[in-house]
Image (tube, rainbow, N blue to C red; front, side, top):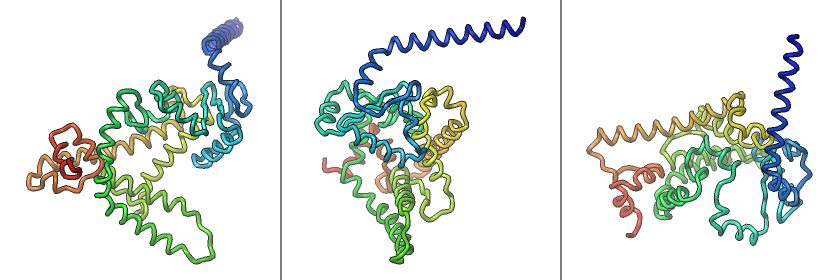
Length: 301
């Protein structure tokens, strides 16, 4: 009797789930029909084209993605689960898309995959909020401001050049990508927030490992579309590791901001104009009384 009750409950659950799937497919039928009319590699039900990618590494995944796109250029369609991705390679087609405001909203994949590491930054937001953020960022990235960071670029580039010089024996081939990655990481962190990661010279690889975890996870979610469902993703070991890496890097930056704020509140002998500012300092100062002073210092107003 108990077995019959269990079987009945299972059947009810199965039919309810089937009805929900059919209702979903009926609602998005035109979406699927139009998507399948576009040229692209053959897709399987449920998983789409995810099975055709053979790697979890982000760089290799991008290479395979580009190879598929070239095969079906100038328009290529991919299905990642129920999500449709359309790749344009012709410049005229790209121009027709990006010049219209109604096409500039972030898609589900872009918003879902960048929300955790980038919060409400330029990679994640769109519409009017994106324009407002972009105006602030554009001011901070003026060429006259970027020139003040040349010393930082030079310092880390010299470290990179010396490391590559030690490798150059004229015979042995080396993969130099990791060296450039570490150099770039040092430059970006110190320029943006004055945090010294010492990726090239130190023994602490935590930041490097966290960045790699975040990027590799973004690629892996494409290959396993069910991981785009947040409740499933967050329950997996991969999701927990990804969230921990993102929170760790956010914590470093937040702690640096708090440290600078405390220093400025307790130090009166050193003015803002005498500090060696970072990109984050400039962004935080935008919209405050210091904005005018910062712009007058770097820009010809």
